[in-house]
Amino acid sequence: MLVRFFFELRTGGIPVSITEFLTLLAALNARVAEVSAQDFYYLARACLVKDERHYDRFDRVFARIFQGAEQAFAQLAATVPAEWLQSLAARTFSEAERRRIEALGGWEKLLETLRERLREQQQRHAGGNRWIGTGGTSPFGTAGFNPEGIRIGGHGPGARRAVKVWEEREYRNFDDTVELGTRDLKLALRKLRRFAREGARDELDLEATIDATARNGGLLDLKMVPERHNAIKVLLFLDVGGSMDGHVHICEELFSAARSEFKHLEYFYFHNFLYENLWKDNQRRGATHIPTDRVLRTYGRDYRVILVGDAAMSPYEIVQAGGSIEHWNEEAGAVWMQRLCAAFPRLVWLNPEPAARWAYSPSTGITRELIAGRMFPLTLAGLDLAIAELRRPLSGGAAALTGTGATSVTQSPPAGVP
Image: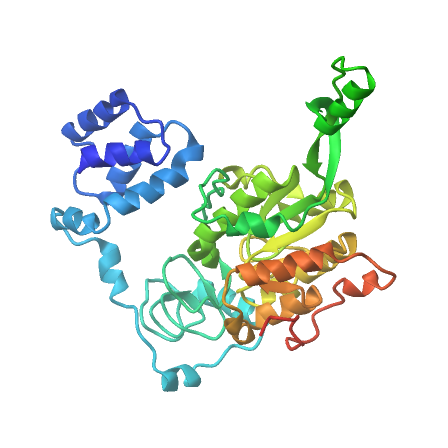
C-alpha cells in the first residue's frame, strides 16, 4: 500500500523522491506513528511534501488510498478515545421535538444568557436543554439542535444554524493548477472577454507582413503587433471554510479556469460574508488581513466582481454588528455589501447550492436582496446567466442595481433561477 501511495503521489503532481519515501519508512520503523491515522497523516505529509502548495493534492491522494484505514488503526489502540464516548451523546431529534424547542428571542438575549451560563456552569454536560454541552437542545454547545445558538467547539454535521463559532479554524487555499475534468467552465468564462492588444510588439502580424512585403517589391518587411489579451478585469471573492468545505472541488475548478482566462484577475478570500477585512492566504489569514475599504479604493468601477459562496449562515452574520462568527465586526456585513455594490456596478454572486434550496435559507434571501437578485447557481446554465449580467452595459439606471438594504427575504428571482 505504501508503494502504491508513493506512485499515486507522483502521478498526482507531487514531486516525491525515493529519498523522501525512505525517510517515511525509517520513521515508521522507529514507530513515530503507531496507532493513530492522524499521526500517520501528519508524518507522511512532513516527510513527503516540501511545498505547502501541494498540501491540497496530498490530501486528495491520501484520502483515496487510505479510505477506511482509520478503522484498522483504531483496532490497535489500547483504549477507546474519549471523543468516541462523547459522540454517544449525539441525538436525532424528531419533528415534534424540534417544534417544542424555542429560540431565546434575539442576539442580545442570546449573548446575555451565554454570559450567565459561563458564570454558573462548573462541569461538563451532555444531552440537556440548559447548560453548555453536547447532543442536547441548549442554544450553546455542539452536536445538538436549537433554532438559534452559539456553537462552541465541535465539527461534523449539524443544522448549520450556529450564530457564532468559538474555535480556531484552518482553511486551505484553492489550488489554481488543478486540471479540469471538462472544458465547460473555461468555455463559459470565455464569453466574458474583450480583446485588446497590449505590451511590446513581439507578435507577427501575418496579413500586414504579406501586404508590406508585396508593396516593397518582394523584399521581406516584417510587421509586428502587441499580443492580444483579454482586457476584462475581474475581482473574485471566494467564501472558504465551514459549509463551503463540501464545495471545494467545484470552487477549485472555477478558480483554475478564471486564472487561465483572465489576465487582469485579483482574488480574495472571506468566510461566510464580507466584513472589514479580507485575505489572500488562508494559512496566514490571522496575520495578513487586507482592509476591505482598501480594495474598494484600489480597483476601478470597470472591474467585474464575482462572489462565490453558499450564503448559508445565521441572518445575524449579515444584519447585526458583532454578528460575525469569528470576530467582533463593528459594522454589519450588509453595510459592506452595499458599499461593494456601489463601488462595482457589475457584480454577481455564484452559489454552489442548488437553486431549489435557496428559498429555505433566510440568509440566502437577504443576500439576494442586497445584490438586487443577481445570484446565480454555480452550474453551466447559471454561469451563462451570470456572464450575461456582467456583460450588460451600464446605463443611467445603474445605481438601481446596487444594494439598498435587507428589509425582506422574499423577492422575484432573475430569469432562469427558481
